Amino acid sequence: MGIFDFFKPVNSITPDEVRRYIREKSTDEYCLLDVRQPAEYAAGHLPGAKLIPLGELRSRIGEMNPEKPTVVYCRTASRSRSAAGLLTGA
Image (cartoon, rainbow, N blue to C red; front, top):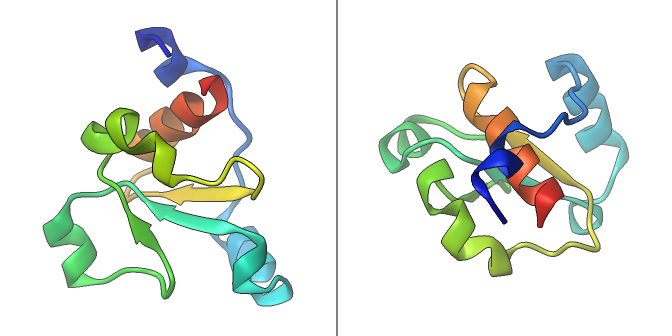
């Protein structure tokens, strides 16, 4: 994994598409990854989301299951895009 993995093109979906996806799938069929900071997560997060702040993702990537689709989110989509690129590169 290199620095350019943070800039790989990734698929994006809208919040409505995420809601529909979560509603239609069982929680064991996907991983919901929150890449915000712990204080942001504590203030509110999607039920079932795993917190791995973007700055820790590279060292904690082994906690992710590559066999499951992963929905990554943050506050403004910039961190989640970077995280998705990193996961794609892994």
